Image (tube, rainbow, N blue to C red):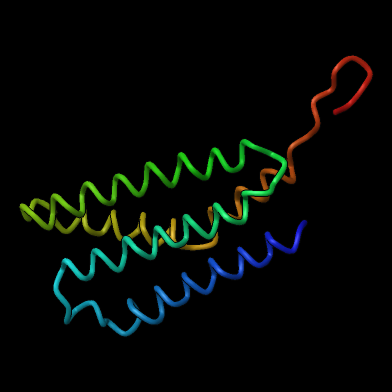
Length: 133
């Protein structure tokens, strides 16, 4: 496993720790306006996406970067869409907010990156004839 993967995993862990302990743990979000809260959360999720993308950029397995791109793209668009709806129209109820909080916390954590790296290490080469690639 390359050093880049370890550095990226450490970076995502620090972002997650800062998110959970530094912001959520001290309840700083209780005292700020929702637009700032949503902006900070969105920025941190985008930062984790960019750090993970950087870590997977030089991996030889293209499916890893594609999976990271599509999964995080879908999550970021979903959080952006529902956050905007809630901000503009106040349509978000407590269940929706709790779901988006859990989704954001999971995808800000190092767990998705670790799962992707673990899956890449478990991948077996495809045999073609008697040769292995």
